[in-house]
Length: 530
Image (cartoon, rainbow, N blue to C red):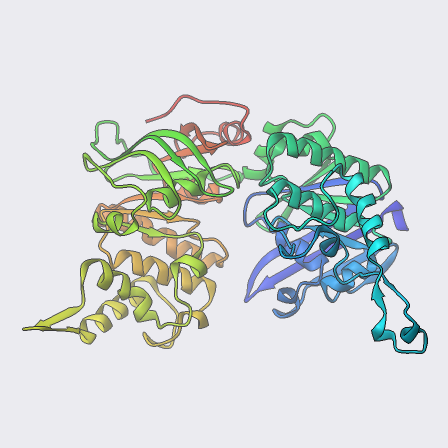
Protein backbone atom coordinates (compact mmCIF):
# COMPACT_ATOMS: atom_id res chain seq x y z
CA UNK A 1 0.00 0.00 0.00
CA UNK A 2 1.42 3.33 -1.11
CA UNK A 3 2.42 5.61 1.79
CA UNK A 4 0.98 3.03 4.18
CA UNK A 5 -2.57 4.10 3.29
CA UNK A 6 -5.46 1.67 2.99
CA UNK A 7 -7.59 4.33 1.25
CA UNK A 8 -6.92 7.50 -0.68
CA UNK A 9 -9.38 9.82 -2.41
CA UNK A 10 -7.42 12.08 -4.75
CA UNK A 11 -8.66 15.43 -6.06
CA UNK A 12 -12.33 14.44 -5.88
CA UNK A 13 -14.70 16.85 -7.65
CA UNK A 14 -18.46 16.60 -8.02
CA UNK A 15 -21.06 18.82 -9.69
CA UNK A 16 -24.84 18.74 -9.48
CA UNK A 17 -26.39 20.56 -12.44
CA UNK A 18 -23.55 23.07 -12.68
CA UNK A 19 -23.24 23.56 -8.92
CA UNK A 20 -19.83 22.29 -7.77
CA UNK A 21 -20.27 20.68 -4.35
CA UNK A 22 -16.84 19.01 -4.05
CA UNK A 23 -13.80 21.04 -5.08
CA UNK A 24 -10.72 18.87 -5.16
CA UNK A 25 -10.87 16.85 -1.93
CA UNK A 26 -7.88 14.73 -0.89
CA UNK A 27 -8.41 12.14 1.84
CA UNK A 28 -5.90 9.64 3.22
CA UNK A 29 -6.63 6.84 5.69
CA UNK A 30 -4.17 4.41 7.22
CA UNK A 31 -5.01 0.98 8.72
CA UNK A 32 -6.05 1.43 12.34
CA UNK A 33 -6.41 5.22 11.98
CA UNK A 34 -9.53 7.12 13.02
CA UNK A 35 -9.99 10.03 10.62
CA UNK A 36 -12.70 12.52 11.59
CA UNK A 37 -14.37 14.49 8.80
CA UNK A 38 -16.12 17.59 10.09
CA UNK A 39 -17.95 20.56 8.62
CA UNK A 40 -21.26 22.36 8.73
CA UNK A 41 -24.34 21.12 6.88
CA UNK A 42 -23.72 21.52 3.17
CA UNK A 43 -19.94 21.29 3.54
CA UNK A 44 -19.86 18.22 1.27
CA UNK A 45 -19.21 15.40 3.77
CA UNK A 46 -22.17 13.26 2.69
CA UNK A 47 -21.45 13.78 -1.00
CA UNK A 48 -17.84 12.67 -0.47
CA UNK A 49 -19.02 9.48 1.24
CA UNK A 50 -21.58 8.90 -1.54
CA UNK A 51 -18.67 8.99 -4.01
CA UNK A 52 -16.77 6.47 -1.90
CA UNK A 53 -19.74 4.10 -1.77
CA UNK A 54 -20.72 4.42 -5.43
CA UNK A 55 -24.20 5.67 -4.63
CA UNK A 56 -26.64 5.79 -7.58
CA UNK A 57 -27.16 9.54 -7.14
CA UNK A 58 -23.48 10.08 -8.01
CA UNK A 59 -23.48 8.09 -11.23
CA UNK A 60 -27.00 9.22 -12.13
CA UNK A 61 -25.82 12.83 -12.20
CA UNK A 62 -22.68 12.54 -14.29
CA UNK A 63 -20.28 10.76 -11.95
CA UNK A 64 -17.26 12.48 -10.41
CA UNK A 65 -13.70 13.52 -11.17
CA UNK A 66 -10.63 12.26 -9.34
CA UNK A 67 -9.34 8.89 -8.18
CA UNK A 68 -10.04 6.40 -5.41
CA UNK A 69 -7.00 4.33 -4.43
CA UNK A 70 -7.82 1.30 -2.27
CA UNK A 71 -5.12 -1.06 -1.01
CA UNK A 72 -2.68 0.48 -3.46
CA UNK A 73 -4.83 0.11 -6.58
CA UNK A 74 -7.19 2.51 -8.34
CA UNK A 75 -10.81 1.38 -8.09
CA UNK A 76 -14.08 2.61 -9.52
CA UNK A 77 -16.66 1.71 -6.87
CA UNK A 78 -19.89 1.20 -8.76
CA UNK A 79 -22.35 0.49 -5.93
CA UNK A 80 -22.66 0.03 -2.16
CA UNK A 81 -22.60 -3.73 -2.75
CA UNK A 82 -19.32 -3.35 -4.63
CA UNK A 83 -17.92 -1.32 -1.72
CA UNK A 84 -18.94 -4.09 0.68
CA UNK A 85 -17.24 -6.72 -1.51
CA UNK A 86 -14.04 -4.67 -1.38
CA UNK A 87 -14.18 -4.52 2.42
CA UNK A 88 -15.62 -1.03 2.93
CA UNK A 89 -18.55 -0.79 5.33
CA UNK A 90 -20.77 1.95 6.70
CA UNK A 91 -22.70 2.57 9.88
CA UNK A 92 -25.52 4.86 8.84
CA UNK A 93 -27.05 7.72 10.80
CA UNK A 94 -30.49 6.50 9.72
CA UNK A 95 -30.84 2.85 10.67
CA UNK A 96 -30.79 0.37 7.80
CA UNK A 97 -32.33 -2.48 9.81
CA UNK A 98 -35.45 -4.56 9.11
CA UNK A 99 -37.61 -4.37 12.27
CA UNK A 100 -39.52 -7.59 11.62
CA UNK A 101 -36.27 -9.59 11.37
CA UNK A 102 -34.17 -10.91 14.24
CA UNK A 103 -30.79 -9.49 15.18
CA UNK A 104 -29.03 -12.41 13.47
CA UNK A 105 -31.11 -12.07 10.32
CA UNK A 106 -30.22 -8.37 10.14
CA UNK A 107 -26.53 -8.96 10.78
CA UNK A 108 -26.33 -11.73 8.18
CA UNK A 109 -28.68 -10.21 5.58
CA UNK A 110 -27.40 -11.00 2.05
CA UNK A 111 -24.52 -12.96 3.64
CA UNK A 112 -26.48 -15.93 4.94
CA UNK A 113 -24.62 -19.15 5.79
CA UNK A 114 -26.13 -22.32 4.33
CA UNK A 115 -25.60 -26.03 4.83
CA UNK A 116 -26.08 -28.88 2.42
CA UNK A 117 -29.03 -31.24 2.35
CA UNK A 118 -29.26 -34.61 0.59
CA UNK A 119 -30.93 -32.97 -2.39
CA UNK A 120 -28.50 -30.06 -2.59
CA UNK A 121 -25.64 -32.57 -2.57
CA UNK A 122 -27.09 -33.92 -5.81
CA UNK A 123 -26.73 -30.50 -7.43
CA UNK A 124 -29.92 -28.76 -6.31
CA UNK A 125 -28.14 -25.80 -4.66
CA UNK A 126 -31.39 -23.91 -4.16
CA UNK A 127 -32.46 -26.58 -1.67
CA UNK A 128 -29.70 -25.82 0.85
CA UNK A 129 -30.86 -24.80 4.33
CA UNK A 130 -29.82 -21.86 6.46
CA UNK A 131 -27.17 -22.81 8.98
CA UNK A 132 -28.90 -20.96 11.79
CA UNK A 133 -26.55 -22.33 14.44
CA UNK A 134 -23.44 -21.00 12.70
CA UNK A 135 -25.13 -17.68 11.87
CA UNK A 136 -26.17 -17.25 15.48
CA UNK A 137 -22.69 -18.06 16.80
CA UNK A 138 -21.00 -15.56 14.49
CA UNK A 139 -23.59 -12.89 15.32
CA UNK A 140 -23.05 -13.55 19.03
CA UNK A 141 -19.31 -12.99 18.55
CA UNK A 142 -19.95 -9.66 16.79
CA UNK A 143 -22.43 -8.55 19.48
CA UNK A 144 -19.92 -9.38 22.21
CA UNK A 145 -17.31 -7.26 20.45
CA UNK A 146 -19.59 -4.22 20.68
CA UNK A 147 -20.66 -5.09 24.22
CA UNK A 148 -24.34 -5.66 23.45
CA UNK A 149 -25.92 -8.32 25.66
CA UNK A 150 -29.19 -8.67 23.74
CA UNK A 151 -30.07 -12.14 22.42
CA UNK A 152 -28.96 -12.76 18.86
CA UNK A 153 -32.43 -14.15 18.10
CA UNK A 154 -34.45 -11.23 19.44
CA UNK A 155 -36.62 -9.23 17.05
CA UNK A 156 -35.21 -5.78 16.26
CA UNK A 157 -38.66 -4.23 16.40
CA UNK A 158 -39.25 -2.34 19.62
CA UNK A 159 -35.59 -2.19 20.64
CA UNK A 160 -34.16 1.10 21.98
CA UNK A 161 -32.40 3.21 19.35
CA UNK A 162 -29.09 2.69 21.14
CA UNK A 163 -29.37 -1.07 20.66
CA UNK A 164 -30.10 -0.58 16.97
CA UNK A 165 -26.98 1.50 16.50
CA UNK A 166 -24.80 -1.20 18.07
CA UNK A 167 -26.48 -3.86 15.90
CA UNK A 168 -25.52 -1.75 12.85
CA UNK A 169 -21.90 -1.78 14.05
CA UNK A 170 -22.01 -5.53 14.77
CA UNK A 171 -23.21 -6.13 11.21
CA UNK A 172 -20.24 -4.24 9.76
CA UNK A 173 -17.53 -5.88 11.87
CA UNK A 174 -19.04 -9.30 11.15
CA UNK A 175 -18.30 -8.90 7.45
CA UNK A 176 -15.36 -10.93 6.20
CA UNK A 177 -12.34 -8.88 5.18
CA UNK A 178 -13.64 -5.52 6.39
CA UNK A 179 -10.84 -2.96 6.04
CA UNK A 180 -12.59 0.42 6.30
CA UNK A 181 -15.72 1.48 8.17
CA UNK A 182 -17.45 4.85 7.83
CA UNK A 183 -19.37 5.98 10.91
CA UNK A 184 -21.93 8.60 9.79
CA UNK A 185 -23.16 10.57 12.82
CA UNK A 186 -23.39 7.37 14.90
CA UNK A 187 -24.04 9.13 18.22
CA UNK A 188 -26.73 11.53 16.98
CA UNK A 189 -29.55 9.59 18.67
CA UNK A 190 -27.61 8.06 21.56
CA UNK A 191 -27.53 8.99 25.23
CA UNK A 192 -24.29 10.29 26.71
CA UNK A 193 -23.49 6.89 28.24
CA UNK A 194 -24.24 5.05 24.98
CA UNK A 195 -22.12 7.55 23.06
CA UNK A 196 -19.10 6.94 25.30
CA UNK A 197 -19.54 3.21 24.86
CA UNK A 198 -19.72 3.56 21.09
CA UNK A 199 -16.54 5.65 20.99
CA UNK A 200 -14.76 2.93 22.96
CA UNK A 201 -16.00 0.33 20.47
CA UNK A 202 -14.62 2.45 17.62
CA UNK A 203 -11.22 2.54 19.30
CA UNK A 204 -11.23 -1.24 19.73
CA UNK A 205 -12.13 -1.74 16.07
CA UNK A 206 -9.27 0.57 15.05
CA UNK A 207 -6.87 -1.40 17.29
CA UNK A 208 -7.66 -4.43 15.13
CA UNK A 209 -6.27 -2.56 12.12
CA UNK A 210 -9.51 -1.32 10.58
CA UNK A 211 -9.39 2.21 9.19
CA UNK A 212 -12.28 4.39 10.40
CA UNK A 213 -13.82 7.53 8.90
CA UNK A 214 -15.85 9.25 11.61
CA UNK A 215 -18.38 11.94 10.66
CA UNK A 216 -19.78 13.93 13.57
CA UNK A 217 -20.77 17.44 14.61
CA UNK A 218 -19.94 16.77 18.27
CA UNK A 219 -16.53 18.33 18.59
CA UNK A 220 -15.79 16.89 22.03
CA UNK A 221 -16.26 13.37 20.61
CA UNK A 222 -14.01 14.18 17.67
CA UNK A 223 -11.21 15.32 19.96
CA UNK A 224 -11.66 12.27 22.20
CA UNK A 225 -11.49 9.57 19.55
CA UNK A 226 -9.81 10.85 16.36
CA UNK A 227 -6.18 10.55 15.32
CA UNK A 228 -6.56 12.99 12.43
CA UNK A 229 -9.18 15.61 11.58
CA UNK A 230 -10.17 16.82 8.11
CA UNK A 231 -12.19 20.04 8.03
CA UNK A 232 -14.50 20.76 5.09
CA UNK A 233 -16.30 23.98 4.24
CA UNK A 234 -18.40 24.86 1.18
CA UNK A 235 -17.19 21.78 -0.69
CA UNK A 236 -13.54 22.56 -0.04
CA UNK A 237 -10.93 20.92 2.16
CA UNK A 238 -9.92 23.60 4.66
CA UNK A 239 -7.20 21.57 6.36
CA UNK A 240 -6.21 18.15 7.67
CA UNK A 241 -4.53 18.24 11.08
CA UNK A 242 -3.49 15.87 13.89
CA UNK A 243 -6.14 15.66 16.60
CA UNK A 244 -3.63 15.77 19.44
CA UNK A 245 -3.65 19.14 21.18
CA UNK A 246 -6.48 20.66 19.12
CA UNK A 247 -9.36 22.42 20.92
CA UNK A 248 -13.07 22.63 20.18
CA UNK A 249 -12.72 26.38 19.71
CA UNK A 250 -10.05 25.93 17.04
CA UNK A 251 -12.16 23.37 15.20
CA UNK A 252 -15.27 25.56 15.30
CA UNK A 253 -13.32 28.51 13.94
CA UNK A 254 -12.02 26.37 11.07
CA UNK A 255 -15.55 25.19 10.31
CA UNK A 256 -17.28 28.58 10.33
CA UNK A 257 -14.53 31.11 9.64
CA UNK A 258 -15.05 32.67 6.25
CA UNK A 259 -12.68 35.62 6.31
CA UNK A 260 -15.73 37.68 5.42
CA UNK A 261 -15.06 41.08 3.90
CA UNK A 262 -16.50 44.06 5.80
CA UNK A 263 -18.40 45.13 2.68
CA UNK A 264 -20.37 41.87 2.84
CA UNK A 265 -21.61 42.43 6.39
CA UNK A 266 -25.11 43.84 6.85
CA UNK A 267 -25.25 47.51 7.75
CA UNK A 268 -25.85 48.24 11.43
CA UNK A 269 -29.44 49.07 12.46
CA UNK A 270 -30.57 49.90 15.97
CA UNK A 271 -33.61 48.02 17.31
CA UNK A 272 -32.90 48.58 20.99
CA UNK A 273 -36.06 50.62 21.53
CA UNK A 274 -38.23 48.81 19.00
CA UNK A 275 -41.29 46.91 20.19
CA UNK A 276 -41.22 43.13 20.25
CA UNK A 277 -43.25 41.28 17.63
CA UNK A 278 -42.57 37.84 19.14
CA UNK A 279 -41.33 36.65 22.53
CA UNK A 280 -40.25 33.13 23.39
CA UNK A 281 -40.34 32.14 27.05
CA UNK A 282 -38.90 28.85 28.31
CA UNK A 283 -39.51 27.47 24.82
CA UNK A 284 -38.93 23.75 24.26
CA UNK A 285 -39.25 21.71 21.06
CA UNK A 286 -39.06 17.93 20.75
CA UNK A 287 -37.64 17.72 17.22
CA UNK A 288 -35.50 14.58 16.76
CA UNK A 289 -31.87 15.59 16.40
CA UNK A 290 -32.69 19.30 16.85
CA UNK A 291 -34.21 19.55 20.32
CA UNK A 292 -34.75 23.00 21.86
CA UNK A 293 -34.24 22.91 25.61
CA UNK A 294 -35.68 26.12 26.99
CA UNK A 295 -34.88 29.45 25.37
CA UNK A 296 -35.96 32.99 26.13
CA UNK A 297 -35.81 35.53 23.33
CA UNK A 298 -37.39 38.80 22.27
CA UNK A 299 -37.62 39.37 18.50
CA UNK A 300 -38.02 43.00 17.51
CA UNK A 301 -40.51 44.18 14.91
CA UNK A 302 -38.84 44.90 11.58
CA UNK A 303 -35.53 43.15 12.25
CA UNK A 304 -33.87 40.20 10.58
CA UNK A 305 -32.66 37.82 13.26
CA UNK A 306 -30.51 34.82 12.43
CA UNK A 307 -30.08 31.47 14.15
CA UNK A 308 -26.67 29.84 13.73
CA UNK A 309 -25.16 26.70 15.23
CA UNK A 310 -23.77 23.32 14.36
CA UNK A 311 -26.11 20.60 13.11
CA UNK A 312 -27.92 18.75 15.87
CA UNK A 313 -27.63 21.61 18.37
CA UNK A 314 -31.24 22.81 18.04
CA UNK A 315 -31.29 25.76 15.66
CA UNK A 316 -33.73 24.10 13.23
CA UNK A 317 -36.08 23.14 16.04
CA UNK A 318 -37.04 26.73 16.87
CA UNK A 319 -38.94 27.62 13.69
CA UNK A 320 -40.36 24.10 13.34
CA UNK A 321 -41.64 24.29 16.92
CA UNK A 322 -43.21 27.71 16.48
CA UNK A 323 -45.01 26.42 13.37
CA UNK A 324 -46.34 23.37 15.23
CA UNK A 325 -44.56 20.81 13.08
CA UNK A 326 -42.98 19.22 16.16
CA UNK A 327 -44.26 19.15 19.76
CA UNK A 328 -43.50 22.43 21.55
CA UNK A 329 -43.93 23.68 25.11
CA UNK A 330 -43.44 26.97 26.91
CA UNK A 331 -44.90 30.25 25.74
CA UNK A 332 -44.82 32.19 22.47
CA UNK A 333 -46.23 35.71 22.49
CA UNK A 334 -47.01 37.27 19.11
CA UNK A 335 -47.91 40.94 18.93
CA UNK A 336 -48.59 40.89 22.66
CA UNK A 337 -50.93 37.87 22.67
CA UNK A 338 -50.25 34.18 23.39
CA UNK A 339 -49.81 32.10 20.27
CA UNK A 340 -51.44 28.69 20.40
CA UNK A 341 -48.76 26.02 20.23
CA UNK A 342 -48.86 22.79 18.22
CA UNK A 343 -51.44 24.14 15.78
CA UNK A 344 -50.00 25.02 12.38
CA UNK A 345 -53.21 26.48 10.94
CA UNK A 346 -53.61 28.77 13.95
CA UNK A 347 -50.06 30.09 13.47
CA UNK A 348 -50.60 30.71 9.75
CA UNK A 349 -53.79 32.66 10.48
CA UNK A 350 -51.67 35.11 12.50
CA UNK A 351 -49.80 35.98 9.29
CA UNK A 352 -46.70 34.01 10.24
CA UNK A 353 -45.34 32.12 7.24
CA UNK A 354 -42.67 29.43 7.04
CA UNK A 355 -40.15 28.24 4.46
CA UNK A 356 -39.01 24.78 5.60
CA UNK A 357 -35.48 23.43 5.34
CA UNK A 358 -37.10 20.31 3.87
CA UNK A 359 -38.47 21.82 0.68
CA UNK A 360 -39.24 18.46 -0.95
CA UNK A 361 -40.78 16.79 2.07
CA UNK A 362 -42.63 19.72 3.67
CA UNK A 363 -42.45 22.77 1.45
CA UNK A 364 -43.60 21.49 -1.94
CA UNK A 365 -45.91 19.09 -3.74
CA UNK A 366 -43.48 18.01 -6.46
CA UNK A 367 -46.10 16.46 -8.76
CA UNK A 368 -48.20 19.62 -8.74
CA UNK A 369 -47.83 22.82 -10.76
CA UNK A 370 -45.96 25.96 -9.79
CA UNK A 371 -49.21 27.92 -9.49
CA UNK A 372 -50.79 25.32 -7.22
CA UNK A 373 -47.76 25.27 -4.94
CA UNK A 374 -47.72 29.06 -4.72
CA UNK A 375 -51.44 29.73 -4.21
CA UNK A 376 -53.03 26.68 -2.52
CA UNK A 377 -51.69 27.60 0.98
CA UNK A 378 -53.37 31.02 0.70
CA UNK A 379 -56.58 29.41 -0.52
CA UNK A 380 -56.62 27.01 2.43
CA UNK A 381 -55.69 29.54 5.12
CA UNK A 382 -57.33 32.80 3.98
CA UNK A 383 -59.67 31.62 1.20
CA UNK A 384 -57.89 33.91 -1.23
CA UNK A 385 -58.30 33.62 -5.01
CA UNK A 386 -61.93 32.55 -4.65
CA UNK A 387 -65.07 34.10 -6.14
CA UNK A 388 -68.46 33.71 -4.51
CA UNK A 389 -71.71 33.60 -6.49
CA UNK A 390 -74.65 33.31 -4.11
CA UNK A 391 -74.28 29.74 -2.84
CA UNK A 392 -71.40 28.79 -5.12
CA UNK A 393 -67.68 29.37 -4.55
CA UNK A 394 -65.37 29.17 -7.54
CA UNK A 395 -61.62 29.44 -7.99
CA UNK A 396 -60.58 32.77 -9.51
CA UNK A 397 -58.20 31.37 -12.11
CA UNK A 398 -57.25 34.84 -13.35
CA UNK A 399 -56.21 35.92 -9.84
CA UNK A 400 -54.20 32.70 -9.42
CA UNK A 401 -52.41 33.30 -12.72
CA UNK A 402 -51.68 36.95 -11.90
CA UNK A 403 -50.17 36.08 -8.51
CA UNK A 404 -48.11 33.22 -9.92
CA UNK A 405 -46.77 35.28 -12.82
CA UNK A 406 -45.94 38.13 -10.45
CA UNK A 407 -43.94 35.85 -8.18
CA UNK A 408 -42.19 34.21 -11.14
CA UNK A 409 -41.10 37.66 -12.28
CA UNK A 410 -40.11 38.97 -8.83
CA UNK A 411 -38.11 35.94 -7.83
CA UNK A 412 -36.81 35.22 -11.34
CA UNK A 413 -38.09 31.63 -11.29
CA UNK A 414 -36.76 29.88 -14.38
CA UNK A 415 -39.60 27.79 -15.77
CA UNK A 416 -41.71 27.15 -18.86
CA UNK A 417 -44.73 28.72 -17.20
CA UNK A 418 -47.10 28.56 -14.21
CA UNK A 419 -48.38 25.11 -15.20
CA UNK A 420 -44.95 23.44 -15.08
CA UNK A 421 -44.52 20.76 -12.40
CA UNK A 422 -42.35 21.89 -9.50
CA UNK A 423 -40.53 18.55 -9.54
CA UNK A 424 -39.09 19.44 -12.94
CA UNK A 425 -37.40 22.60 -11.63
CA UNK A 426 -33.83 22.94 -10.39
CA UNK A 427 -33.21 23.07 -6.64
CA UNK A 428 -32.76 26.84 -6.69
CA UNK A 429 -36.03 27.41 -8.51
CA UNK A 430 -37.85 25.01 -6.21
CA UNK A 431 -36.59 27.09 -3.29
CA UNK A 432 -37.93 30.24 -4.92
CA UNK A 433 -41.35 28.58 -5.28
CA UNK A 434 -41.28 27.80 -1.52
CA UNK A 435 -40.61 31.46 -0.78
CA UNK A 436 -43.29 32.56 -3.23
CA UNK A 437 -45.86 30.34 -1.49
CA UNK A 438 -44.95 31.84 1.89
CA UNK A 439 -45.14 35.40 0.56
CA UNK A 440 -48.55 34.77 -0.96
CA UNK A 441 -49.76 34.44 2.63
CA UNK A 442 -48.82 38.14 3.07
CA UNK A 443 -46.90 37.50 6.30
CA UNK A 444 -46.05 40.04 8.97
CA UNK A 445 -43.35 37.62 10.07
CA UNK A 446 -41.47 35.15 7.89
CA UNK A 447 -39.56 32.14 9.25
CA UNK A 448 -37.00 30.78 6.78
CA UNK A 449 -34.88 27.69 7.44
CA UNK A 450 -31.79 26.95 5.33
CA UNK A 451 -32.90 29.31 2.53
CA UNK A 452 -29.94 28.57 0.24
CA UNK A 453 -29.18 24.91 0.93
CA UNK A 454 -28.34 22.98 -2.22
CA UNK A 455 -28.71 25.85 -4.69
CA UNK A 456 -26.12 27.53 -6.88
CA UNK A 457 -24.36 30.82 -6.12
CA UNK A 458 -26.50 32.90 -8.45
CA UNK A 459 -29.76 31.60 -6.98
CA UNK A 460 -28.40 32.09 -3.46
CA UNK A 461 -27.80 35.76 -4.05
CA UNK A 462 -31.24 36.28 -5.57
CA UNK A 463 -32.89 34.65 -2.54
CA UNK A 464 -30.83 36.62 0.00
CA UNK A 465 -31.35 39.92 -1.80
CA UNK A 466 -35.07 39.30 -1.98
CA UNK A 467 -35.32 38.55 1.74
CA UNK A 468 -33.45 41.74 2.49
CA UNK A 469 -35.65 43.78 0.16
CA UNK A 470 -38.79 42.22 1.65
CA UNK A 471 -37.63 43.33 5.08
CA UNK A 472 -36.50 46.82 4.09
CA UNK A 473 -39.34 47.75 1.73
CA UNK A 474 -42.32 45.93 3.23
CA UNK A 475 -41.26 45.83 6.88
CA UNK A 476 -41.60 42.03 7.22
CA UNK A 477 -39.83 40.70 10.32
CA UNK A 478 -37.68 37.76 9.29
CA UNK A 479 -36.20 34.87 11.25
CA UNK A 480 -33.48 33.09 9.26
CA UNK A 481 -32.00 29.76 10.34
CA UNK A 482 -28.92 28.75 8.41
CA UNK A 483 -25.74 26.69 8.47
CA UNK A 484 -24.15 29.40 6.32
CA UNK A 485 -22.78 31.91 8.81
CA UNK A 486 -21.47 34.12 6.03
CA UNK A 487 -24.99 34.50 4.65
CA UNK A 488 -26.45 35.29 8.06
CA UNK A 489 -23.85 38.00 8.55
CA UNK A 490 -24.72 39.52 5.18
CA UNK A 491 -28.43 40.11 5.94
CA UNK A 492 -29.08 39.86 9.70
CA UNK A 493 -29.24 42.54 12.39
CA UNK A 494 -28.49 40.01 15.14
CA UNK A 495 -27.37 36.38 15.14
CA UNK A 496 -28.30 34.02 17.97
CA UNK A 497 -25.93 31.06 18.30
CA UNK A 498 -27.64 27.87 19.46
CA UNK A 499 -25.69 25.12 21.21
CA UNK A 500 -27.07 22.09 23.04
CA UNK A 501 -30.62 23.38 22.54
CA UNK A 502 -30.01 26.74 24.22
CA UNK A 503 -28.89 30.22 23.24
CA UNK A 504 -25.15 30.43 23.87
CA UNK A 505 -25.14 34.13 23.01
CA UNK A 506 -26.30 36.73 20.53
CA UNK A 507 -23.81 38.61 18.37
CA UNK A 508 -23.87 41.40 15.86
CA UNK A 509 -22.96 40.41 12.29
CA UNK A 510 -19.66 42.33 12.45
CA UNK A 511 -18.46 40.41 15.54
CA UNK A 512 -15.10 38.62 15.08
CA UNK A 513 -15.00 35.09 13.67
CA UNK A 514 -13.41 33.96 16.92
CA UNK A 515 -16.49 35.03 18.92
CA UNK A 516 -18.74 32.95 16.71
CA UNK A 517 -16.30 30.04 16.95
CA UNK A 518 -16.29 30.12 20.74
CA UNK A 519 -20.08 30.11 20.95
CA UNK A 520 -20.62 27.48 18.28
CA UNK A 521 -18.12 25.13 19.91
CA UNK A 522 -20.28 25.06 23.01
CA UNK A 523 -17.40 25.90 25.33
CA UNK A 524 -18.03 29.61 25.75
CA UNK A 525 -20.85 32.02 26.49
CA UNK A 526 -21.13 35.65 25.50
CA UNK A 527 -23.55 38.19 26.94
CA UNK A 528 -26.53 38.94 24.70
CA UNK A 529 -26.09 41.88 22.35
CA UNK A 530 -29.32 43.75 21.63
